[in-house]
Image 1 (tube, rainbow, N blue to C red):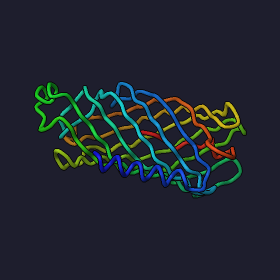
Image 2 (image 1 turned 120 degrees about the vertical axis):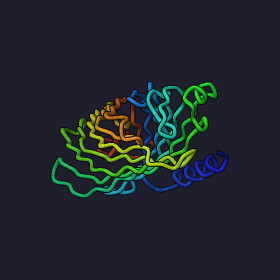
Image 3 (image 1 turned 180 degrees about the vertical axis):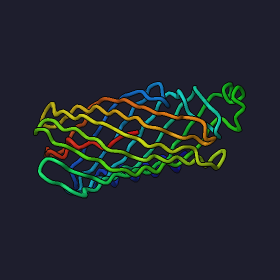
Length: 229
């Protein structure tokens, strides 16, 4: 855990000195997998075409798995690195390639470990999530986003297995409320398959929050959030 904390500090330090427009997000939400969660993210708009960031999400478990066994209590935390690249733009319509890689940690109490007959009270997994994002700029103050991502999670500890994959469809609504802040609403849903082939047939997620432009400059690019799952 100390190595991860050190790596995170180094990434944030490099992120802070990179010369690019910075955006900070704070959202809260609920999903099929988590009763409630908090998502905090920093993003850099390096150019009109390229954006990269770091994202931390932690939540109270509702419907997750350790070694393909169901857990409904505990904590889940994901550290991920989203990247988006503009593929096409014509007038008010924009298409981006989006991907996110990350590592996810889950933990339950010793009592729940015994109750669910788990091999351990924690798990570690990796997430890979490619997708496409279409953005329609309705005005200088408002845009909507839609598209899909394909999250794939691989558990590596305590068991190495393909945990689940999802066809994630999303809809985002983004309203500018000041020169340097926007309101974010993100909705996700889609079919899923679990490690045993008979779990998580459908997932959903809803979250809302704010995006802030940090430092000098405020552009229409502030209105384009990355999809979250």
